[in-house]
Each structure stands twice: as structure tokens, then as C-alpha cells.
Length: 405
Ligand code: SF4
Ligand code: SF4
Image 1 (cartoon, rainbow, N blue to C red):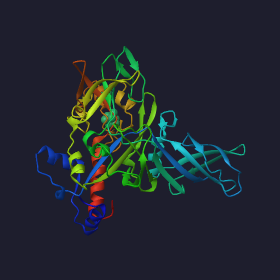
Image 2: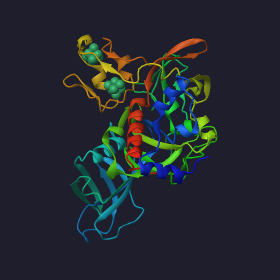
Image 3: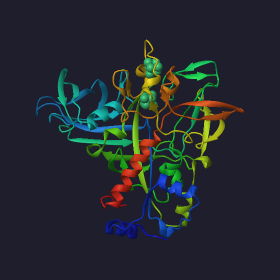
Image 4: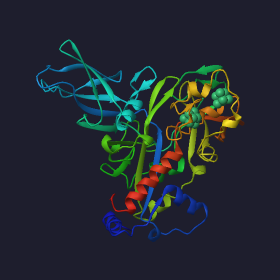
């Protein structure tokens, strides 16, 4: 049995034994004997489309006394909810913005990334019957805090369309084609934080974590969290976030929000150590019918993450279609014929592998078995590569003593 205080002391002394979940799983796969004295902390992470993300912002829009209170508000065209404080006659508006709010194909997730990236944000505020227009950047926003109502689900579901036609859904970019033609999946499998501590023995309200690269905290379990499929509610200041861990993801039902979370798992006893041994192939992935979201098959994450984590573009194989479907449909806007692939913006979702008739996008997304037939995975709504990067970042901060448990 180890105490958190003892691990923190080792971190401060520079002697803590810290591994990313990827490194730890590699040792497990290689059959290494890992004892409790060999490891103090494992950093686990996830990066995914997380609908339950929102932000609270406090924005000065006019001088004191210019208006009584803001009634309606838009940021880059995205509707926000002014309040709860009315900020009567102080020229400031507090507001909540949902990651899934939208202005066409631009959504709250895009807005959060643009704020963090230092872009100019156009404010339109309706106050006392007048419209106030103003441009701000993150330096002008007095308070910006991102929170999640639910995130980092222990394991998610895959979705299939069991009927003829295509179903427009947040789980597909161009409509989920049926019957049984493709599967869309989510979840970072063996590196997901709760998967590594399923009964949440070391993850609790006030646990210090990274959210989009910024230090944040767990508030507790999130909405729809259950003993079998727990998730987290978290928050962090947007000031310390990095754009590469967040953003918008445009589905066939509109924009969604990308969020990344890394959690340190302190190895306090043999029970925690045993849970960290879980591998992709042992983690269940229910495949649900998109029409009612009821599971019809059980697969596992070994089938999802056994291929490439990264998607590559091979320019030589582009046949220059009249209209490039990848440029038109890439959910993060990461590809254009002129500039090629923006690897920072790319979510490695793999949708382009299916969209591109020339086969210029390379990546093995795997397949799942449903009713004895192999059905290809055509969309991943989790970016395991980026999650691994965040777990590396957390490991680095623990090792240099700037992040304590
Ligand atoms: S869809 Fe593929 S082959 Fe066609 S223009 Fe785009 S990249 Fe080239
Ligand atoms: S994997 Fe392809 S479709 Fe997905 S974000 Fe990257 S470039 Fe766009």
C-alpha cells in the first residue's frame, strides 16, 4: 500500500516512476513482471467527440452604465445563454455556451478552439432593445472555464444501421449507411482513464487532471454515469488549454465538440495495479442499432485499435476528382486540395479512407463481426493518437515536478 502523499514526495524529489498507459500496456504485452514498487503513476487519457462539453465565459461588451442587462448573445454567430448573473449596468455579460450549439457548420467546439487559439471573436449582444457589436480575443475575456456534464466514458458503443438507406446522426459524417454496411465507433479502449480504474478508487471529485492540456479537476461522475459505464464531469480554465486537443467535428447532424482529458492513476496498491493490466481485446464494445441505440452484438476494442492510429495522405494516389469529397466532408476541415492534410487539425477519424475513391488516404480501421459477417469500421470518433500525446504531456509534467496528485 502506498499513500498519495508518499507519491507526491517522490514527484517533488524527481524520483517518481511514471509511465504512460501505452508504455504500461507494452510492458504487460511483453510479459514483464510489474510489481507495485516498480510504478508510482500511470497516465491515462482520452480524446473524443464529447457532446457534453460547455463553457462559461465572462465578456465585457460595453462601458459601465451603457445598458441594463444583455438579453441575447451570439459569439461568432453561435447562440449563448446570458446569465445566471444579470450583471446589471456593469457592461459585462456572463454566458454559457454549449459545445454543440451551432451557426451552420460552425459549432461551439470550433468556437472554443478559436478562443484558445487567440482568434478574434465577434460578439453580438442584444441589450435594452439595442444590438451591440464588438470584437474580442481571449485577452479580453475575463473568465473562461470549460466544463463537461459527461466525458471520458469508460467504454462507449459502436453503431450500425440495420435498415436500408442512410441515417443522419451525430455518429456519422455523411449518414450511416445500411443495412449493415458500416460501423462507427468511439472510445480510446485500454488507455481510457476509467477503463484503468473502473471502480474509480483513485479518481474522485477534486482529482487533478489535464483538460485539453490545461490543469483541471474532476467534479465527480457525469450524467448517465452507471456502475458498468462510468464517466466523468470535469472542469478547467481555458487559459492554459492547447488548440490541438480540442475543436469542432462536423457530423451529418451538425457540429460536435472534441475534448481531451488525461488522468494520473496513482498505483497505491495491488488492486489498482491489477486493473491497469487491462488490454484492448478484453474491453467490450457493444454494437448498437442506430435506430434505438440498443446493443445487438458485442465486440471488443482490440478490433478497433489493432490497425493504424494515424491516417496518412499519399498525394501520388490522388486522381483529382472534379469535387474532392474529402475536402467537402472532412469533419475537422483538416484537408484541402491546395494545402493537403493539416496533421494537427486531423482527428485521425478515418472517414477520408472511405470517402476517397482514389485510395489516397491510408489507414486500417478494422472491422467488427455482426451476425457472423465482418462489417468495416468507417469512422472513429476518438483520436487515440492525440490521447496518447496528452498522456505523454501529463507524464512529462509529473516527472518535472510541476504536476502533483
Ligand atoms: S477524393 Fe481522393 S482522389 Fe478525389 S480529389 Fe480528393 S483526395 Fe483526390
Ligand atoms: S482522418 Fe481524414 S477525414 Fe478524419 S479528420 Fe483526418 S483528414 Fe479529415
